[in-house]
Image 1 (cartoon, one colour):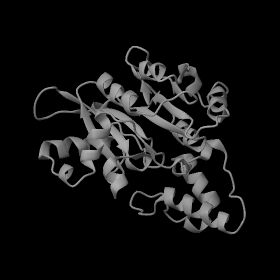
Image 2 (spheres, one colour):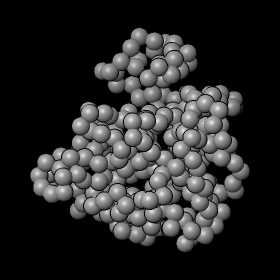
Image 3 (cartoon, helix red, strand yellow):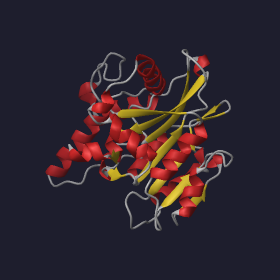
Length: 274
């Protein structure tokens, strides 16, 4: 919140009175997009902010991509259709808890329930359009990161990055270099990393930087301990996929794995028809 506040006060001094207060209704994301669009219309190239102050507004530059035929695509298509709007009260409650835990809204994200974290990863690996020429860069544990198998099968390239690259200081510059590497395709691929490892919480800044350099982002927030009332503030960053778990108060299992998919990032049959 400190760098958000500093950025806003520096670039938009006219909004200095309470722009980032809790009850404020102004969307910083839309504000940044509007500012850059107006600059482009005047024939001036928009000012590029430093990477540490990125909000992820470049995610809009990627545009929507079509997911490959898969179980996840079928589920998302159904959820965006008229017939898919009828859901049970327990499902609504679990969905709302998952969205609240991540600081996101149901207007922007669809929530899919899976039995295990590995099942959710398999659904992503099956549907994401990997091909020869794009990449899958991951800092997730190899023991459950089954997306790698799909990447290799589709002749794409896996970049297994160490956890130390998530450091915002010197070691993190290596991750930034990989984001900026030249690629004739856009998006360049999928970047996956954990929000938490044990008690270490990693910066959401990497979502914004990845988006600005034409990467989609999978954020694994399953390490979030909801029992300690932790919350993620992802509304300013908007990852394309989010993995999290929530308590199930109705039946077994005691924890439900949720896969959050950003609507603006991917095409479904239903959204294409509309």
